[in-house]
Picture 1 (cartoon, protein in one colour):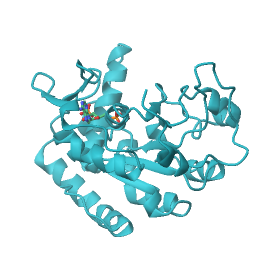
Picture 2 (cartoon, helix red, strand yellow):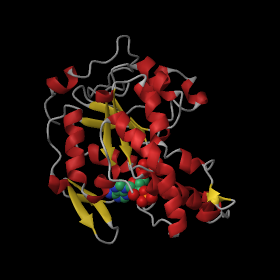
Picture 3 (cartoon, helix red, strand yellow):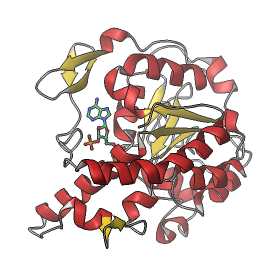
Amino acid sequence: YPTPNEKTYASFPPPINEPRNAVYPNGTQQHLPHTIIIGVRKGGTRALLEMLSLHPDISSAETEIHFFDWEDQYRKGLQWYVSQMPFSYPHQLTVEKTPAYFTSFKVPERIYNMNSTIKLLLILRDPIERVLSDYTQVYYNHLQKNKSYPPVEDLLLKNNELNTNYKAINRSLYYSFMENWLTYFPLENIHIVDGDYLIRNPFPEIQKVERFLNLSPQIKASNFYYNRTKGFYCLRDSGRERCLHESKGRAHPRINSFLLEKLREYFYEPNKKFFQLIGRTFDWL
Ligand SMILES: Nc1ncnc2c1ncn2[C@@H]1O[C@H](COP(=O)(O)OS(=O)(=O)O)[C@@H](OP(=O)(O)O)[C@H]1O
């Protein structure tokens, strides 16, 4: 392991009275996360976590903890949260990802109460593409349980108009959620990763994350290679190559131009408001 990086550690002072578990003989310890990937669902949160974990100073929780959004978990308290964290060395930053945090209204305040200066990572994708990805996820969940699921058009349309009550559409209204986050955290503390770029060319997006977290630049372009069969970038680490799970990078249903136009019209204003809110634009359709 590399020598402890004082600069990295010092820039993330753990909160006072932070609950921690005992130090293991090998010098590792569980503690509260230094940074959290808060979402968005289907934005590329797993890819971001795996790619960031290529960095030797990053230690990540393997599963989604759902601490701040699930009441049953939140009630267990911070000590329980700590117990869900990976064992990490003093120079490492701990990260967890739970994509549902971004769209859950109670979460910003709860994270703020834990650590008001925490740095947050948010990965977003074209809202329409995110809707289709969300649909595809639920479709496959049903398929696995041998249950049927309606075609995407049946969920997106109601009486030939866009069904704005459809959850997947709601979750793509980034503006409404971001407003809530910004009442608790300054914009500088929320780094937004462009999920569409991360798919096409992950390295520059990951470099930006390294800089945001004050990590030394250790992730290299050679850590990524394009896998034609998968149709996505995969990871190369110490000579080992691996792609994300087959549930990541599924084909989406095609929608007709009428529906696409409806979606574009619907997201046009909220997207514009979102860009104004964050002072940055994305090339979403
Ligand atoms: N390198 C690489 N390999 C595979 N998949 C990649 C990659 N980079 C980003 N993505 C995109 O990640 C999408 C899944 O997003 P999440 O991991 O946030 O989904 S989840 O909310 O945790 O279920 C997933 O969405 P789908 O394409 O709909 O499957 C991918 O498009």
